[in-house]
Length: 122
Image (cartoon, rainbow, N blue to C red; front, side):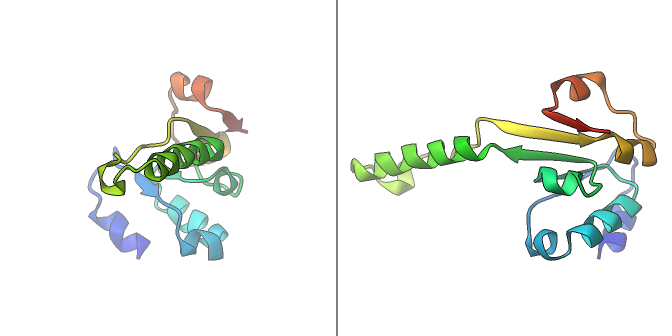
């Protein structure tokens, strides 16, 4: 699993992006612990995982997602072919950083990240 993946990652400059999955929902503490053991920076998709010890999360703001979905639905109801509507990324994201985890991993986080993050857990 994760250890085999880590052995394939050659440099310390590498990082992991952990998208939401059943693993996150069913065993969040195990997942966070195992990812942290790898010693690589990892970005998850929810603050709740950062509160459990993950390094960082970057998640779309739900209200923004709902608004985007409503706009796309309105276009379809007005006759637009769904296949012609471009896929849109979330316009707004929320960033949470866990400084205790960064210290345990001996990571020095840039000031711009700490000053622009929505939440910094100490």
